[in-house]
Image (cartoon, rainbow, N blue to C red):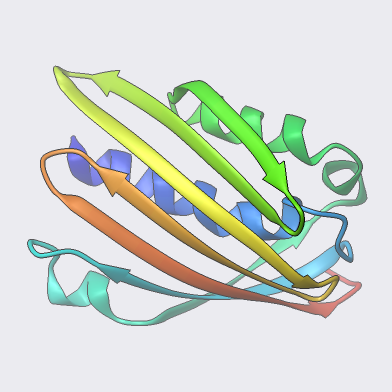
Length: 138
């Protein structure tokens, strides 16, 4: 169950950097690195993926972030923004296991964001990401 929660969390974290601020809509590329004591080696490797950020999501980033958290089963979503950083905290209890996530996303420009996600359950996993805008076309 933890593996499913972790994977859902990673999907959310990967999509948030593009939605967190007024950035360019279009194709974004994200480089991620995950760390955790009990994490299998194949999950600790650097990964690169691409995702599309729609103009609609860019117009209402808070709604898009809350929707993604809710669809992944997270409740009590707390979002705040300070200057060029958005912070999000949420929790999920399922199958007798509590999962908490804290994400901090920083906008460096309208074409570059970085984030740090910490997922805590039976162990703590930390994911760092760098996201860069690639093109207008998805």
